[in-house]
Length: 340
Image (tube, rainbow, N blue to C red; front, top):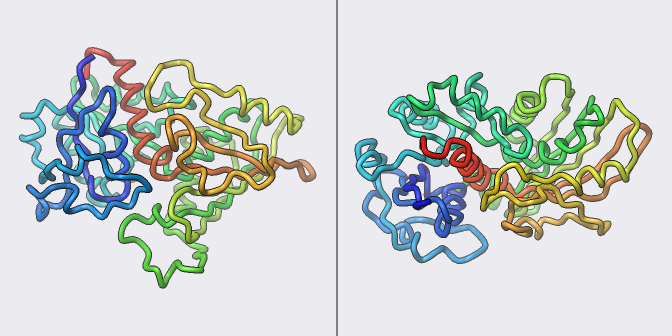
């Protein structure tokens, strides 16, 4: 099919950069409209952005002009799909406005995640939740689909293959990289050689989103810390099951967990990869995998009393943010082909 013109809102932020990077060579989407504050309108993306991703900025994106958000211009360019990397406060106003004008919004913002008719979509887990867009009025109207919080995405993918064993309790501590705080984010004085054991609203997001994705029967106990690494969120997890389970059962469940429902360019065949080395997964693995950064790595599985513990690593900018939204748009196009 022909490429679909798309827009990226908040394109110069860290998540916006991840969107621009992933979309620059995408098979289905053409990022023809990159927005940020109106003061930067007309300037080249490469001149205005403080590029933080660990690889070179795509030349095509660097030479593209930034534009102010203009609903009429979006319509003129034939754009129907909009990727949102907006902060939560402006997203709460802008995203519903775009939806009411008929746009299809794939959002990384948390603003709309908890509305009953807005799915928090992770295709390997709850593809059926996409049907909620019809309650928003699709296809006659636009819609909003969100991806989960970056830490939730990694945790949910690790839990999904194990749900069949009857998960009753999840205790999770997250160790989140500074890129998750955005740019400019934390100052070097705050985070250098330091750990900050508080991230505003993060623990509440984890609890609420896990319950929305899996249902209220899972009791979850989160704690969140910010650590001085650039990319990748680590999590230590302890799970209690209703059924009798062995370590081999858990590893095999992860190994055999695959996504074959819909062929997409962004979703990996195996979303969860078990790292057997005793000192893995490590932060340097954040951009490993195919596609880079889209698989979750788990390791250090062990049993203590009647609980199982493990460590996981999720790329907070790719699988936990931009890549999640792009994959959601891909599965939407596959399901609703012809009614973009």
